[in-house]
Length: 162
Ligand SMILES: CC(C)(COP(=O)(O)OP(=O)(O)OC[C@H]1O[C@@H](n2cnc3c(N)ncnc32)[C@H](O)[C@@H]1OP(=O)(O)O)[C@@H](O)C(=O)NCCC(=O)NCCS
Image (tube, rainbow, N blue to C red; front, side, top):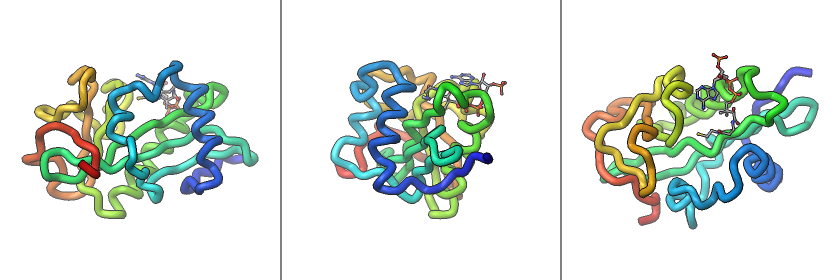
């Protein structure tokens, strides 16, 4: 049975939360990136789930944020069930989400993560873009989606509603 990747629906929400709880260390919501998500809805058209025979195998979500005066989309959380890791599913979810973001006209995406993994999707260290503390600046990565991308964009990352 092939794995199907589709847009996340409202009914998927708690199942996806359970997958994130399984895949991340306890207390994931204490991470600084969650401060940017509080009280702000996800960009639902970019959020995707992967299912094999109906069973959730992976999920990716995106949130809107602001960097200086510019809008950007924050990638994450993303997780693949341990029984499916290393099969390319994480990569497929990232490509699907970024393609949807590009199609929707988002100019730039960022995330907090490991450069050796995300580099293969075009993510590079973002100089001068500051996530809420405590965040290791080496892990703040961005990719251009549509012109002008990250050119000339810097400053603290804020909640979309602030
Ligand atoms: C990170 C994660 C989403 C990747 O999904 P995946 O489906 O396993 O990844 P893919 O199959 O697309 O890619 C696998 C490759 O990425 C590498 N990789 C995975 N995580 C990595 C990391 N953190 N740093 C460097 N490389 C990593 C694997 O070694 C493998 O390398 P290879 O292609 O050379 O064999 C998944 O492992 C996961 O859910 N991890 C737990 C939750 C998590 O850490 N989420 C990301 C938070 S930023």
